[in-house]
Image 1 (cartoon, helix red, strand yellow):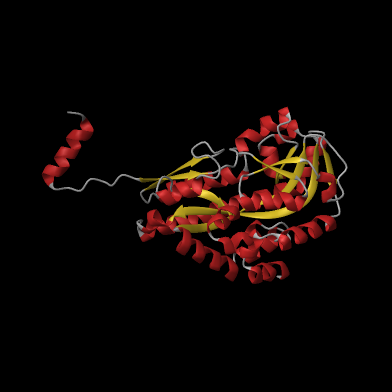
Image 2 (cartoon, one colour):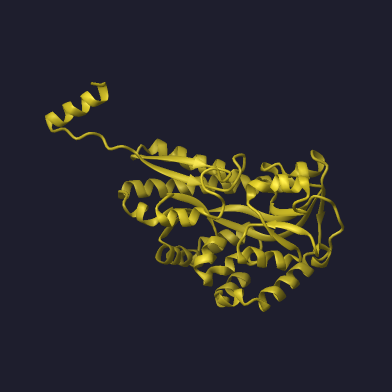
Length: 324
């Protein structure tokens, strides 16, 4: 008989309780391993480990466990515990929150955090819990999304991007965002983008510059156009049934660790965004263009006003955010 089996038999014979096995929390993201998002998730995992509350966290970057776009359904089926859920994934199931996918909704990082940590953010958390059976533990900053192109061109308005095949995730809200930029939105999973840029499968992609750098897209790109079309939150999201079954101590450990992981990501990403554009020029030789965004904002207003999809959004809440 092996030693563990012998101990188990001895414990049973003496009426002793065996220590409970740690519950595993699998945390999936599409973000690449070097990016701040995944590194913040590692901070989260480390803090949970240090708390020694009967929980262990495994992180899976780069869609290595679940394909991008399938994480939220996997959580709802009970096949995954956590993911970095986006506003687009919320919009897919709660149409009134489609406003989170709108171009130029938030002005900057400070505005986004102010909204997400206030009453509107509280309403979002409550709606997601009630309608999606998912608990939002914290809000992380994914970055401000910019357009980057494999071949450089002069861009002063959305008209200059007409016909450009720009990689976008595959959802109606993402495709509408592409339309607001004037591009030809091309659905594609994140792990396929590098080769597609390299081979001409797409003409460009849009992401925060920190993610562009972490994914090494600068190696297959010539230009960045600073469209700043989306200041994007991303949510530490956990299965509500799984979370509700935990002890109060375990729930508190996860909440505190999620706040710590998101804060680590946010602080470093904001700091890095100050210098990353300069590095793309000085270290990698890319052309980085700062442009007047007025024509892009005008087109976005027109596209969303004419969209049937956007009619399902909470218009009052959207205008409240944009005017805040």
